[in-house]
Length: 271
Ligand code: NAI
Image 1 (tube, helix red, strand yellow):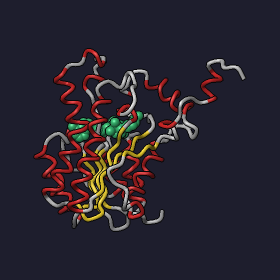
Image 2 (image 1 turned 90 degrees about the horizontal axis):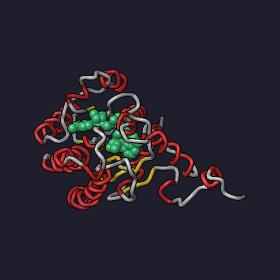
Image 3 (image 1 turned 45 degrees about the vertical axis):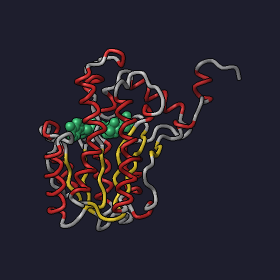
């Protein structure tokens, strides 16, 4: 541990169980000296797992549905009070599509559910940022990180309306990043992560095959949740102060590859 986050305060959204990316981020942030509150939707908290993490990280858990501004306002105010000062980092690690979960194909979506997909997976970031800005809850050079996926740029059958939500999420990163940077020098970025074995990930149709495909396409292989947590720590730290409004690929090179030899060989390509 190098105390990269010593003295920093934050809020971590989205730790459901020990596979969650947010779970790993909490462990690493704690290791690096940060203090933070943990939050998740009341229904997710009922599963009880997050309390184990809270104990390990010496953190309190504050329930909040990230689609409800009232919940977010309270969560942010309580976090600042409990942690004893303004925040330095926020992790948005939230995603869910009722259409994907219920097996609705992209060309046959239920539009009420699609609105929910956007609300949970994209607009929640706007709501968190707007609430933080109104309460002036983030210190100068503070860092907000959201998790995204490359389906925001390229077509991935099976990812359904989450692709549209991720494109919106990345747009909010840019737009809010401009306003928050200008007003308060607060940074906003997204990390576009490799497919990762988590509850959200495995809800995608054909996820296991896609996981293997991406692993074989990427020269470095898929990035793990643990590696993603390390990257988040660097973005929360003071070593990345001038990085903002970016979508940053953390994917072992997947986003920039056309085809890999390993897959060509498996398809029977001539040597
Ligand atoms: P996860 O299922 O562990 O985390 C998703 C979290 O969203 C859960 O903790 C869930 O309770 C929370 N959530 C859902 N609705 C909510 C609401 N209304 N209010 C507050 N929280 C709510 O799965 P994972 O993979 O750790 O997901 C975290 C983020 O990483 C998501 O944004 C996901 O799209 C993104 N991501 C995941 C990849 C993967 O393959 N697993 C790849 C790239 C990005």
